[in-house]
Image (cartoon, rainbow, N blue to C red; front, side, top):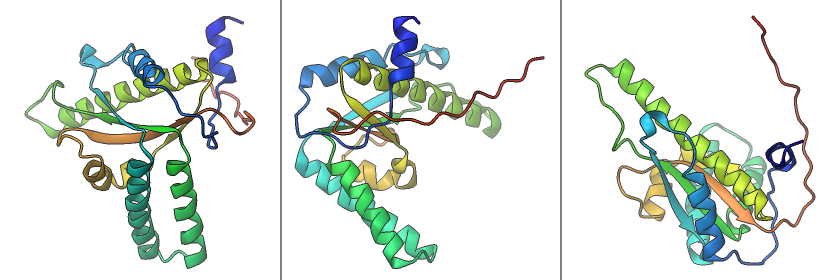
Length: 197
């Protein structure tokens, strides 16, 4: 196997980390690698907010947990299940050595007079940003870090934007938890579904 194939196949979602901090230089290297992803029109619509102070992680975890609790209560989920979900979310956010909030902006994307093409343009920005996120995950693995992609910001984007004081045009897409692994790298994988024509 090539080094890239080995890297891609060995990467796992890691949710538990040691307390070892991650240097600013390493985080910067991860973000720079992320920005080499392909993007629609080469507009590079990704943006990165680094959260690497315990105080900000706690604030973010509490605010996101409060929103999660309200949503699950509205869904009439049993209280014990709600508290487990909120606690798990809190632990994942505060247990990371650092978080990267991956966002997109439509600032440089094309605009059209009709809603359908504008929706496609937004989808193209989402796809581009996700590819940058995949680069970041692979770079983290290459640096010996564990990482986990969390989609929770999609459900509480205003909360995330407010806590992190993000610019108005930054749309949170994910939180990527980072840290040196404190768990084994295990993974189940479904076989690829391929249609040959």
